[in-house]
Amino acid sequence: MMYLTPTITAIHVEDYMLPCLNKQLLGVDCPGCGLQRSVNLLLHGEFLAAFQMYPAIYTIIPLFALVICDKVLNVKVNNFLISGLGIATVALILINYIFKFIH
Picture 1 (cartoon, one colour):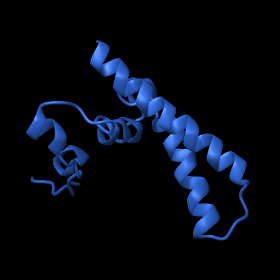
Picture 2 (cartoon, helix red, strand yellow):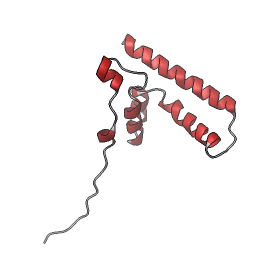
Picture 3 (cartoon, one colour):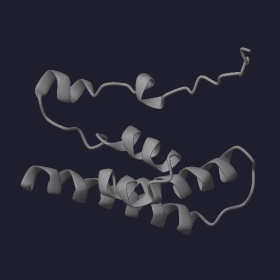
Picture 4 (tube, rainbow, N blue to C red):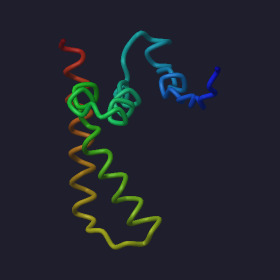
């Protein structure tokens, strides 16, 4: 007797990732290289691997959440907090970018 079981086709995020044009054309990583893969790792629950792939992921997420709350949802958010997260994010991106060139 044959049983019919429903199958769920999972959408693989890897199939929809955009290539880095900077890396393809110039052969050099851009400051955003690794962000998509880091988000994918977060979605799969691999938090340490996501940090190792792109350390600024843990400052970008709360920064975007606060900006959306402030600008879209009109929830008052302290601008000092947004500025601090923005500075931390830029610093982490630049440090990671420089570190890629050194190693």
